[in-house]
Image 1 (cartoon, rainbow, N blue to C red):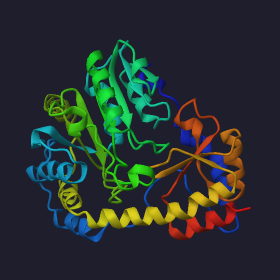
Image 2 (image 1 turned 120 degrees about the vertical axis):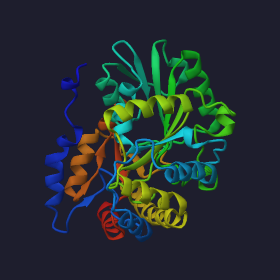
Image 3 (image 1 turned 90 degrees about the vertical axis):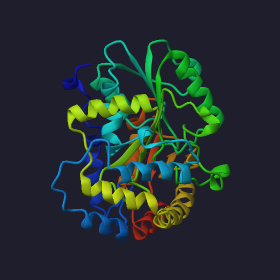
Image 4 (image 1 turned 180 degrees about the vertical axis):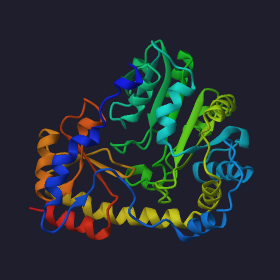
Length: 367
């Protein structure tokens, strides 16, 4: 597929339903995209302001302070030890990395990119940009010869599913059999809610229980958009196999893909402070505790959703029928068909609305 043949942007299909929802007399409740509504913490904004004398070009590799901060964060928050600055690389948000990774890795026609069955659509878009083929599969035994890149997403968007260390280890082993790079999109890892993930740390693909001390062929991808309310900053990074990091660094240098220097300074502060992350998680916990029972009382069944920023739900009818019913209540959600053909009856509800709007949604949903 040529890049000119990319599919239409799926959210454009939501326009008539969004218009219907916005006509509600008590205002719209937008639970669709998942864009943070809470303020960026003051200590991060202050760090950005202090770094605005940015007269020199930034480095694609990131400042030494930023790379050290990423290494320290992985050890402290993810239980990943043994990283050095050569194992990490900042990126301009995580979406550009997801979209460009197949191209930057040199994939081409005939190569295969595997991604989850319930998946953020940019994994498949990235394959298309490189003229590779995308396959949706959650079973490592199904991953075919010719696979060059495997995307995992844990906790998942949209379904909130968490992959444990046993699954991650099996996935890495299969990727190595295939000679494929395996990347885990982990950007919701601080948001564990149910079951074991209410108390246990959501594992990284770089966890020693998964890879031992061998990161070859393995990448972890992370974003500060949700845990630090930095979606507007485009603050993300990757870590893993240093030879892959070096390859990506060189190719990103040629493309001029570099994070602005003030944002690098802000990221150092964000990565070093756990208090604001805990406070934001509590905001999402409160909203989830209001929205989930209201959805269940309204006839929805919640699927997975044990972690992450979303509730993945179905009321047993076509997703577009549900979206239309919700629009009549002044609520916008995301249809499951945006996340793969396997989920025609699911919808995704984001927790990124104010407390007042979440409470209003709960009132409208309850019979």
